[in-house]
Length: 453
Image (cartoon, rainbow, N blue to C red; front, side, top):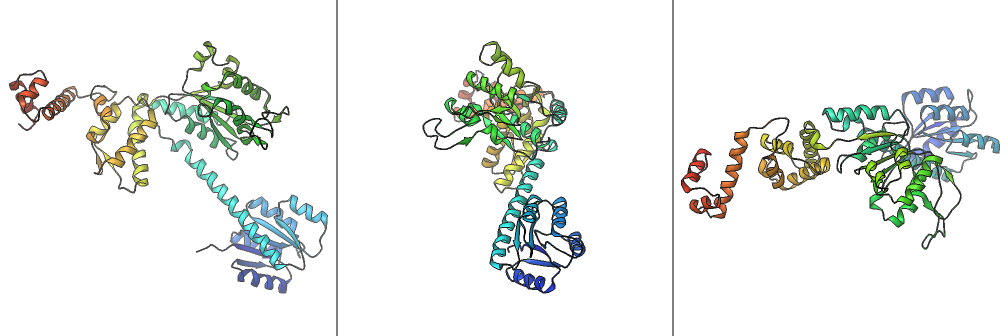
């Protein structure tokens, strides 16, 4: 059912107010009337309204003051002013104070309906925008980033200090450690949270297009430039630009980026007119930029400009305590997406996950959890449901949790004997030969391991 627009109609002329109320209700709106500013204030204290329609002249106040009070208390509420004494000066003042529109008596009802419809659309768009921004802020609250390990707690402590500043930040860490998530958390918890966050993956954009992508271009700058286009820096004005894989940026563009940092202005490709900007730069890399500087692949002066506040993200293998909470988080996420009941991990599966090296870090863990949810039929994930590389590596690594050496050796023996028996089609003599054992030794091992003979 379509939600009705809530309108407060303020007019001291009773007959006109009642007639307009009836017309707007017939049009499908929920209308409340008020004969004065005081009565309107009581209604506003009791209820919320999407649109306010108010006469300019009232017995105890005026429409401009009502407009100013409403915009102060509820900026998203749209106000339409009505007057029988039109003047250009009053109209200009009303629009400056934030009125949606200004119309004169006698009212053209059809025109008013169109204005209300447009005001409602604007109100909805603004409300949705506020809602989406709140969701983004909630999503990237520090509390929603999983990491109870000492290594991540150090990262969070530094992030909490970073958000109080407007300094340039360089995030370093292996691929898959969550550099963009951290960049977004810094933005959405800082003073620029209501302004744009623009992410640019420098390594994913062809070198010949990166300059125009970052700085924009003017019409005629090159073949195909049929109109002016703003770049990512202009789009991020007032907010934050996130330059991922900054180490892949060509050296000639590094020079232009350095100028942007120094002058806080950009020039579009094909133009000589500088455009002032106010942008916070957060960059990220999985490269050793200091080494890149030594090799001449990265400008030293740009490196120091970008590295005002360094933030190093630890690899997942150095934050073993976070593996299980992350795994559970991704399991819940993909069970919901695939409409499955909540799945659990056996102790052996958890130990395997915690014993794996995770070269792809958190991103690899997420991919593994998506895979097991998709392919495992039972609601419990066992060691054998995990990918072979995780099972095999987990058997040969020692973590801070320690390891039951005798159990690990028994598991390895059991796994190898099983494989040998499969290859030999159950013939123990052939299986023993594959394992370089005597048949009697193989049988004794199988008996000790509790394997069927």
